[in-house]
Amino acid sequence: MKQFSIPIRYRSELISSIKKTRRESDKLKKDFSPTSLNFGPLEILLARHFGFCYGVENAIEIAFQTIEENPDKRIFLLSEMIHNPFVNDDLLSRGVKFLMDTKGNSLISFDELASDDIVMIPAFGTTIEIENQLIKKGIEIKKYNTTCPFVEKVWNRAEQIAAKGYSIVIHGKPTHEETRATFSHSESNTPTLVINDMTEAVRLGEYLLGSRDISDFDNDFKGRYSAGFDLNKDLSKFGVVNQTTMLATDTQDIADYLKEIMRSKYNLDASNIWERFADTRDTLCYATNDNQSAVRELLENDADFALVIGGRKSSNSSHLVELCEHHLPTYFIQSEADMLSKNEIIGYNWQTHEEYSKKEFLPVKEKTRILITSGASCPDAIVEKVIEKLVSFYPGAEEFEKIKSRWA
Image (cartoon, rainbow, N blue to C red; front, side):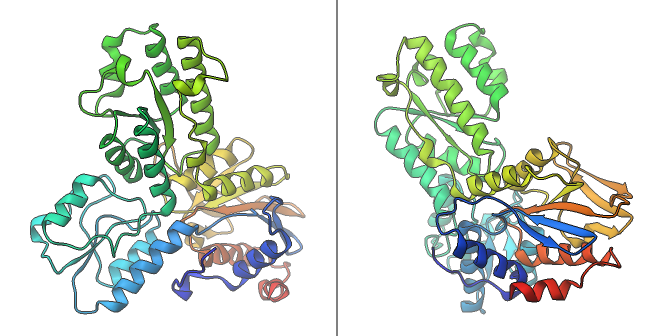
């Protein structure tokens, strides 16, 4: 896989060495067991896969290269490059300005843009409407487009099945930048609907089977379907694609459920179900799959609690928290700064979007074991700092630098 040039401050000597060692010993990526870092009274189990993915590193490389090569130009981002506050703050400190917030609300009017300005499209992609607005102003968008290739893969797959007469159901968070972009690209080719979760998939199934009054459809899915959408006509033949950062198992469960609805409605079997339901399993993101599979394997180990490190707006990070908290106490933190002391941690509730404080979060015992993973937009350098700070809370622990040197 391509090696990207990203700022050294995002790298970690320790984490890079661990990842390199694991890659070399597991070239086929079949071993999802965690890596143990034993400091004596503290043991940390690191997930096999975590941190920056291909799409994130690609976006960061393009962004910083653009800044370096264009010192005399105004540089804008449509919205946050990725959902990590440290990377976004880094870009802002270098003079980059955001045109919109993550919900699509305007921060700087497009009217203020000139044709020689640089506008970067973030890793989530953007809508066709916004692309056309920029093109109309004479702004070059292809050179500075950091859209993740795996997001584009979803768009391409949706276009391919649309050409065969299928409509599209998107499993995604309706207000998320990536879902808004995918919806725009999909609806330009075929009728499209967004559903958020299995509860909505079940509700949609009831509409398809006629067990729910169709007059309620607009209330349930208002603002989430393409213009002129006709439930009975447009969902007589469809496929499911996803926002790439959703739980991969959820997307597959939703697709399997809706496939069964179509099989039942049209009296189909395995040999002809594809006449009504497209196979779209190949749109699931490899990094999302790997990170979530690694967390499932991580959770096979007993531990006192788990730490998930990532930006609070990060969808993929929140789903790692969701997986962990079903098994043991879990704290969603952005960096080592959220561990105020050995007696207090600041966590974030991904469901209520509220910050909270937890006192005495470290257990008082002879040996503490902590599970750690991070989201796809979290720099490895932050993971190292979290580990180093945890070690500092244990006076009898082996020195962090000694453990680090063993991996060098």
